[in-house]
Image (tube, rainbow, N blue to C red; front, side, top):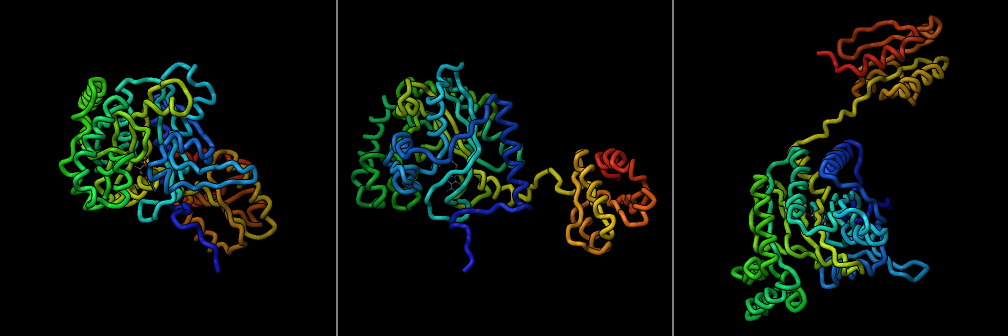
Length: 425
Ligand code: AMP
């Protein structure tokens, strides 16, 4: 039996990977313009980090983590999100002593044991940013703007920004209680998971997708009506900035997000072109996480976007990477006697900066030409025994099929000048 890739994972092959790389390229460019520097943390951490950071009542921690032990008997977990690792690293390397806020971004794999479906995988990738060390609502707005700018630069437009504030440890307990009071009479109607959530995490009942739970959530008290003055001012300021930036958003009272560490602002960008798994980006403020992980009280805000979902929408919209995969030159060699010289020219052209391919299967002239055509070669260089004896090569311009004889000693210079010109009209 052939071995397949594990369920819920994807192989990105050439033909698709170009768009994947383009998503990263655009993100890196946007992040860097907003002053975020890249950080790369391990894909596995001590399990405790996520237990403490994300919260053990969340689905991500209680049901979806890939946790394992190895010979040292310590418990490790493949990261189920990016923020806890970035904060761990911030603390471990004393970044609190650097000028604040510390602005970091990451791109990499995330692991969650979920039931796979279109847009939902067990290994997926996130690109995300964190700004640690400031409570300025301008940073909340910056996260939203930045995640939208990435999507827009990639060519997407049909999405919706949902935003809410879920308060802080001062005001949330009152809200939680109000929510419990609302749900309590209908508790028997909600799904078993939401019944479990009722005591420890009643906010999550608001975003449960099950119809009965939605019905109970309908008419529930709204977190924005319970905000303390500080959270109120903060939220109003975030909205003011978004208005000033002319961002269209929707106040979504049911938006609470899945992880425990969020405080104040939460947001999600939803694609209107994807079906069930429509969330492209999500984030918010997490003013308690740094302290939860053993650091001093430090406000922070961040977001993460799912790269596979972005890729899916791009593909559905027919958006392609603008980078051509075509080769500049294809070197055809005819016969063993010229092979070494053909390889030397291939090598020299590559070192001169051109994208160059040649034949490795001893194909006939005709099928080498076909291969050159398939690869989109701008120029084909033909080297046979006659040419080698005369110290020349044939250079064929694939656009107009014009063929010229060029001295071997000049071919690298000539082609590196020509191939970098835009193709002739
Ligand atoms: P979260 O922090 O869980 O909201 O994740 C942030 C983003 O990652 C989401 O908006 C999705 O785009 C993406 N995402 C989350 N879970 C998955 C998954 N299982 N498969 C693919 N993408 C995901």
